[in-house]
Length: 201
Ligand code: GAR
Image (tube, rainbow, N blue to C red):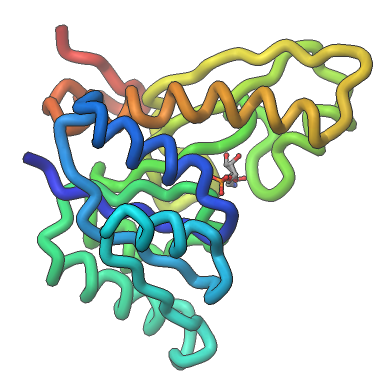
């Protein structure tokens, strides 16, 4: 059974979808730890409600980004974590963190990467005027949303869309896609060859 940690800064609806999938038996793993950089993140309450260990680590308590990431990595190692799932974790990981978990960190992003990386992926897509956007689950490397793509799902943009309505439909898509990608990892079905992530049949 793989041990998963989820890192989240905000509402935590992706965390909730992951926890529900674990409970249904749709993910062959368990969420052993949730960490947030925001004291009031709803994600922490969602974890506690389901009896999952939830930890708030305040970046201001550490000397810098590397020291902060060291503290997170210490917690992850202590909890014997196999997979780190970033779910709305709004910090760029340092190389130290990425190297501590090679091909073991995933992220979900609200666009079809490589389009619209970084902050506000939904706003960027709407402002650009694309007719199709979506979401991407990818492995995390040292760049900003640049790691190998694991799964993607398209979401059409409709004329009446606002950032909120579009993000709502992207969220629905994320809540299907992320648990699927995590389950593939937990079943050792993902293999990265260069930039391409293959699904082993
Ligand atoms: C999600 O839409 C996720 O794709 C996005 O933050 C949202 C978190 O929602 N992540 C990024 O934009 C990362 N650059 P949630 O807290 O309800 O899961």
